[in-house]
Image (cartoon, rainbow, N blue to C red; front, side):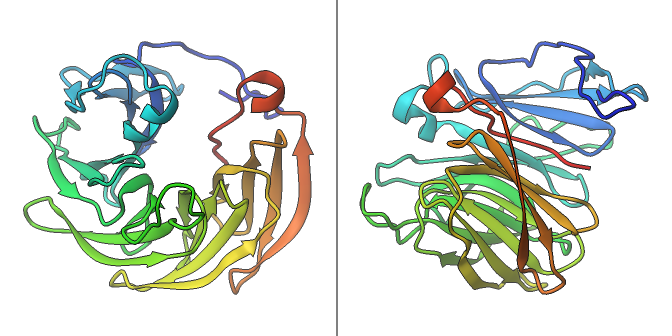
Length: 293
């Protein structure tokens, strides 16, 4: 929670329902956490007016990913990575990568009942990319997936492989592939969609780049600039303000947050950085996610 001066303070600690929680999704009334360790689980909570969480009864679901303990090293690529509500909060979608080996990435989709409880079993869709990492939705409800390894990726270490894929939802709850676009960058991991336009952005951690795209109402993707910003130091998560005026990007290798003003055409104006965050090199860990208002 935030103080009146905007300083975060710990309000509550609650069990996540599994091992190695990595991602959260909230529609304002419900919050679901994705635990990527062990066999993979999702677990739900209700949010009261004070922002405190209460376990949502019977909301725990096991993904059955077949792992043992927390994902470490290369196994992190084989773990569920992100969870998201769809645009109307009728589904929960989870990405599950195939890692650097040739294989199929997967997308898990749970239908949500009127009581906020997921279906007993997910519908599983084979993803267009081999390593789907994070999720977002356009203002028209199209699901977007950042692929750290796309369908046409080169061999590990080749320096090519990232991309963006789009999906629609079928009546059977499968995610139907629409389009996929390679961007010739390394490790395209995070995707965020504008709230009021058709512009979409991704960060590619291995290339230190931020790319931009246009996604049509029916999900067709056009790459605008795969290196709209090219001097980021290991960018990870990023966020846009709700009015689409500003963007903030974590530079994990530098221990800082880079701020940009977003022009009407989707281009960016660099506003500088705020430093002082931990880094992997100095501290053994670094921030991986952020949220803005």
